[in-house]
Amino acid sequence: METSICVFTGNSNRQLAESICGILGIDLGSAEVKRFSDGETSVDIHQSIRGKDIYLVQSTCSPANEHLMELLIMLDAAKRASARTITTVIPYFGYARQDRKASPRTPITAKLVADLLTTAGTDRVLTMDLHASQIQGFFNIPVDNLYAKPVMLSYIKDKFMNHLCIVSPDAGGVERARAYAKPLKAELAIIDKKRERANESEVMHIIGEVKDKVCLMIDDIVDTAGTLTNGASALKEAGAAKVLACCTHAVLSGPAISRISASPLEQLVVTDTIPLKGEALTCNKIKVLSVAPLFAEAIKRIYSDESVSELFLWNDPVGHKS
Image (cartoon, rainbow, N blue to C red; front, side):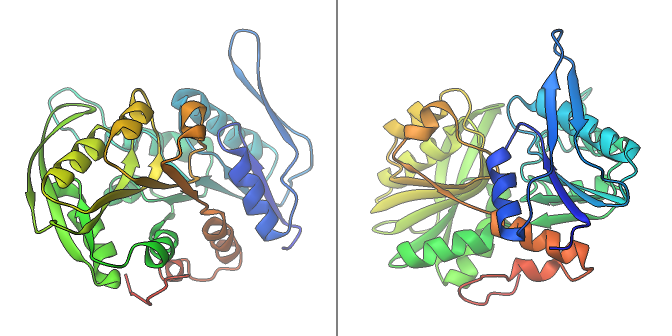
């Protein structure tokens, strides 16, 4: 790649940033993100970036507040160092689940984060599988929302094509599930659930035929895994031969790993937008697919002013048009 491109990263997902740089054929930028004794974040960029096109790779995953502040301070440092353009690469966009006023006197944090990033100096945002597509409209700058679907489709096609049924774990995810079912020519089912409070869900009933099928649940985020594991139990009770799940962002907080280990789920396929930590690293039910090639290709296309939307088809094993 041309020497005018510089990729930097914070502390949230260095391995993914290094993988992206390896594919681009460049070295990861020299920068240090550290903290003062009182917890304040400090950023030092150890190379000249004047007139360069800067790409800051940082997922705002746990600890979300620390990683978000790292990103904002990196943006400020790059802007003040006279970078020509700054593209914020956020593989996992945190605070996206609060994207509307679901009840009185609640914040819209997705909009707040969008405003913070713009004010801090980003010229463009590159992300993946936003929890809600309308978040792109919270920005007044270009936002490229990539999808993990091409990577997931390749894996699914190689492993689970016989008697396949794609399952949406809730009514809100039907469009996402249908986008997987159509190119795979698989059947579609929906789990109708009732959520009493955040991070808790109760399965009500299943819409569709799942008996003797290989059921693959599709979602964008797996957090405490309550939705997936409850859904897996319901599918098995309905006669499913096998239950698996594909989720882009492996948040995996709280009791997630213990729930997954004890559930009928045979495999949970995730991407490396969030690095696995702790018990998740040794859970033999979790399979990680890398999205570094997608992000590297997107960076190339952004730099050379080529179409990024073509990546929605990139490496699609069955040539489905989104």
